[in-house]
Amino acid sequence: MANYKIHETDVLVIGAGGAGLRAAIESAALGMKTAMVMKSLLGKAHTVMAEGGAAAAMANADPRDSWKVHFRDTMKGGKMLNNYRMAELHAKEAPDRINELEEWGAVFDRTPDGLIMQRNFGGHTYPRLAHVGDRTGLEMIRVLQDKAVHMPMDIFMECTVTHLFKNGDAIVGALAYTRDTGEFHLFQAKSVVLATGGGGKAFTVTSNSWEYTGDGQSLAWQAGADLLDMEFVQFHPTGMVWPLSIRGALVTEGVRGEGGILTNNKGERFMFNYIPDAFKNDVAATDTEANQWVREVITGKQATVRRPPELLTRDVVARAIVNEVREGRGSSHGGVFLDIATQRTADEIKRKLPSMYHQFIKLANVDITKEPMEIGPTAHYMMGGVLVHPETQMSTVKGLFAAGEVGAGLHGANRLGGNSLSDLVVFGKRAGAGAADYVKQTKPSAKVSEHDVDAAIAENLSTFDHKSGENPYALHKELQEMMNTYVGIMRKEEDLKKALVELDAFEKRSANLSVVGTRVYNPGWHLAMDLRNMLITSRAITMAALERKESRGGHARSDYQGYDPNYAKVNLAIKNANRQMVVEQIPRSPLPDELKNLVEEA
Image (cartoon, rainbow, N blue to C red; front, side, top):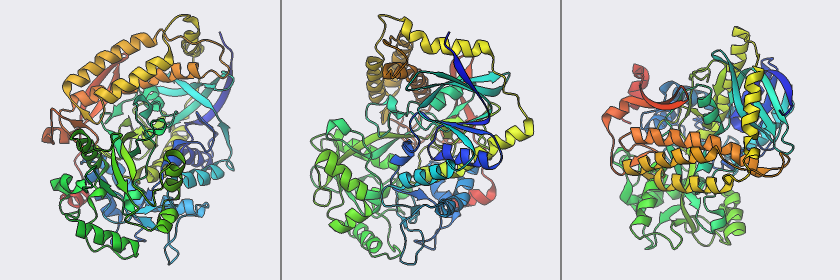
């Protein structure tokens, strides 16, 4: 049996994106012995790929904005399935978290008066996204990691967690390994914060980086925690479609926020044909009105007309693009066109969207100041994740917390662009504080069973014993293709049932994965362990999608089109019943009267 190093800590934070960094900072500031482990290097978290901005009702660009409008927009965008308390806390606290980042050194773009500039994004009534050009996530990570490295905490880079351990009904630690040497580490932790992001690498076309393999969702479920809203997967409307080597790479919503328009192969601005009844009063109905909005935004005026249809919520825009392609009006590479060149000058584009300009020049040989971008939907974000308490972010397992994309509740059926970055700092802070308070109040032990550790290590090493088993790369490719085909943007019962049959077969095959070589620098071994998590997360998505017999937000069924009022009353929880995955309907809590009045029109 392999040896392992033992580390003792009060709070173990798994993940070093915006949520993980903010949680670790808060935990350390409250006097907890804190350790932070991350799959990649510090500063390389997926948060850096979030470009457009962080949503916060600061009212710098439009004095009509307020937390109440932000709350209403979030609930409306989430199709009223949001945890209302999380949406309320987020709307109220986001401005303070953005101001805090500025105090710590974030260099946001500025208005002529010197305030933090805010831009328009889909689903937001007013310009609300605090931004740094089109590289806001990168700036947030720069500031947060600079703050973190000056705090008293232990940092473990390129270190992947494979198992969580419990003593009775409480979390007491985790097993991890270093990716370069394969050395195992046992973290005896009094509390654990999951901040591992999503699971987009289970799909063929995704904006997600290699780390996003559903680790946190899988680890939590295996530890007995409930998952929530797993059927809701957001396919970002605008990912690159050509060349194939970078298919799925994100094209920020900031392009549309700055006036970019979507056209099909006939040159038609097709989004006017896809405006849902619920948004008729919010969205421009003609080119003339939409273009007036762009002119007002460009000149820095307060918009007096309705926003363009390109700024509808992401679920609406993504399905519209899919329909255009399906009906033969797509581009030659299976997408549509996003044009900013006719809406903005070359200097404005390079100043407002520098990363997008360089991304297309370098990767696609396309000058977006002169020609349109070719784009299509890409698996981008999971609204579902670990069921958490809105105030503390603790899961249904004692001592296990979750924040950011791995947590569920804030976004409901569909996330508004920009809410993710403010979510990270609002609930990252709350998770760090919740974990610290749990340790102080309950004074838990962190005694991990040696038997559990040995069994976990044996499971991790088992792939080296299978000399002629399955190739993890081949199995991963098949899983991605299956999920894209059967559990993608448009779903139906027949396909979802096929997906479950395929997942049964994949799980049996995964028990015979074969890896050659040693544990040193062995990416095949790493993928074999990641596949365990992707299979569990994929099953949770598929089972919830089969159960929800309606179309709502990031979940669309061709056999159940439109809303079913019965499903507006429940969220779907994925539970662990003796290692078997089961789906349970959770009745929604009614909104308090003061919040109900805010969202009645939504």
